[in-house]
Length: 436
Image (cartoon, rainbow, N blue to C red; front, side):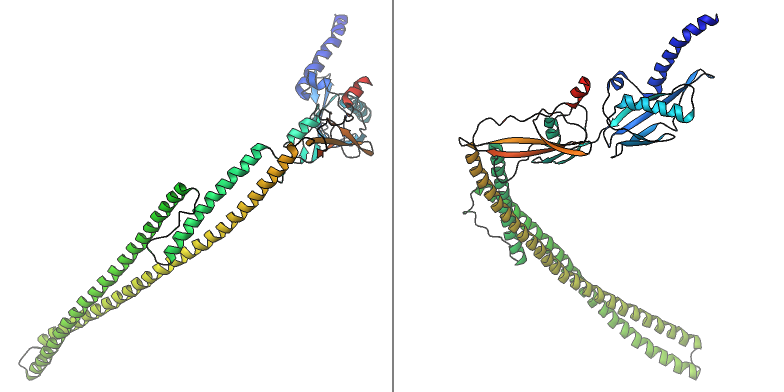
């Protein structure tokens, strides 16, 4: 029975190992097949599992495993082990080296199971005549042509050597700029009429190429002018009517004050008469007191009327101030818009002149490039660091790149339309490794 148990222990452990590495390390067939060299700035993931005989399971060592970065010196710093030189070894060799180091450092009976997975390679760099030079992510099998596509393709300067589609774009831009200039000029004419207080704007349509468009824009600006004039007129009319109404109210109050003054004079006479009669004993003192109370009421009413006049005059002053401010605000807004429109017109005219020059240069260069004996080619060079040396080698668009390569793209105008000379293709480092 014991013999049978021992005979199955080896196969069972193999099954456990495969299961543990698939669960803990995320190892797949593709990961096993990948045996790339670990260049500087390569990001790796280290997974370590150990068989625990007492529990019959594999235990993952999270405290030692994790994500690490290969330094520029070609080393990696790991817990417990310390700094390990990576050199030009691959992931399988590094995993084996880490297993041996852990067994020796910790004093294990059996070697732990280690996997090394490449998470991110050192990026490649694309410079030269490309649209978006910069740093790009590397993946195995990346070619020079693919890196050119990643960087936005061939740079297309705005000063020539353009295709018919680019020339058509310039023509469209010129037409759009001309339309914008026309709109701005008609707008300026409307603003000038508005700031001068004129009710009609003038603009000569006879000198315009697209008179239909100019007439439509002119009609729109006339509608805007009429609407703004009507807005100002309605607001000013409301303020004038308010001011007149307040003036009429003051007139009515002043008449009330005149009537109150007459009543006060009459009451004063009655009070004097009542006072004389009380002194002679003819009338009661209460009569005199009632008259004096009535007199004080009339005085209070008069003060209220005077206060109402003061309030009405204050409202008249405010309405007058708003009426004057309405015209000042309108003039300020129009002057600001006119200044902005003039600046926009200057910018549009400058943009039009620049676009016209670019179109002329593009047409001239296009004719030159299209003539017999002219053409364009792209030349590629790859700068690659091997150890401590940096080599610059001519490459083709099908050259395979390595992590950290710098691809330089150069546009060249050839003297004749002959095929470009054959360039030396960089060796495929993966095929060399396979042969070794």
